[in-house]
Length: 174
Image (cartoon, rainbow, N blue to C red):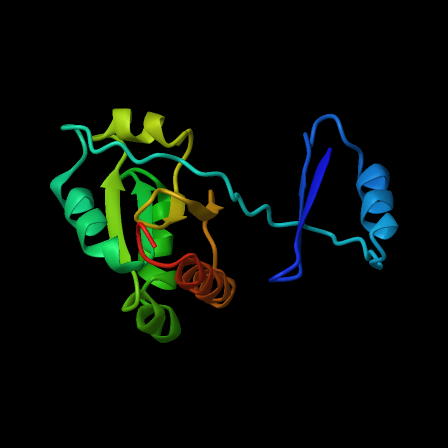
């Protein structure tokens, strides 16, 4: 387990192997830092890994264009989906048309990628199942990842947090 602390933002990052580290060990590490820990029923894991986005020829033009438009620090949401995927269709027909979600989507570049037509791109980003939504900046930093259907209210909360994280990271090269 590796712990780092960003004193400017008062943010602690603990990197660990979830297969090797048991919850009591993680709880003790956090308590040793002076924080109280409450166990949650469900934990959303937010990836903070950096991926280098490769603009290979096989990437759809719509995604290339979104990456270009996102150079000013705008968040990109890449929605990997398939026509046969029931949760994908439900996400599009319920969550993404919700008024609150639609308003937040005005602040991002939303790109739909059909996994059946772009399997190599899916492999590049580790997509094994759909829906799989990646919340990334123009530099390829993944702020969050959603690998299932999510209703409008929690999705709006997730999207709002990713937009804020993207703005904190700043524009490319800054």
